[in-house]
Length: 256
Image 1 (cartoon, rainbow, N blue to C red):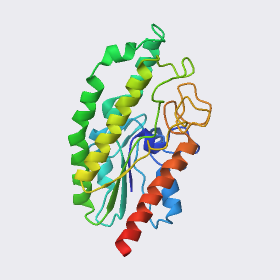
Image 2: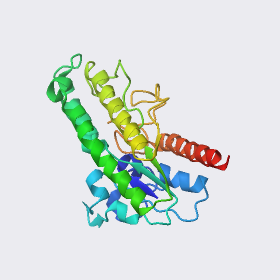
Image 3: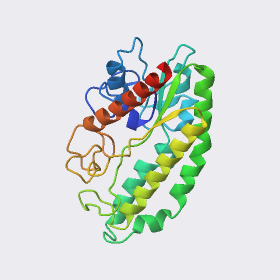
Image 4: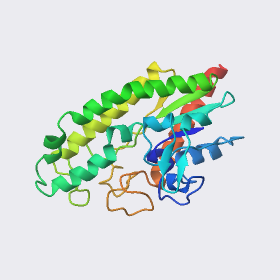
């Protein structure tokens, strides 16, 4: 069972599948790859692009349709649940587009950091209890399920950017990277508190951010079939491998 936003759904990675169409789920997103690797007897992917934590509990209106509340798909028979959510609550993708516009005014400065200040970290903190509520609801619906909170792949380098290929000002690159680190730390902590495991996808991302030629996440000006500022097919394979490894390690521990 896969719950999540567009970093789970994999918009524009061939091929789109499932309904509603506008959720833009790829059949090569990490949940699909995990299901095939584990030879899952039943697999349900209800992730949807643009989803926030609220859409775990309520339907999400999309173009020409509606995605039901994602938690409604979790049942007592569900054995494995992946949860990839929180980025849209912080507004990370929208923030990057705002920062791209501001970078024109000061490519060597930090106009985005001046614009947002501590707002993004405050959003991360405000999202924490929502993640906790989701995990509580998953455990209530599927008390025997293994629950994995899936983190976000590294988006930017920690110091030097690559303006204008990735239009973020020099001083904003480390600022935005710190915000993403904060988001992933929060998800890891809520997973620990909420009886789930955290899949750390940021780890090992050095040299695979949007500025890299070996990128796992596409920049605003894409070069692979994927949505801008989202995982490409390579990134999805990386995440899938980490989810499978976490699952396998847990099964091995339980069998001892």
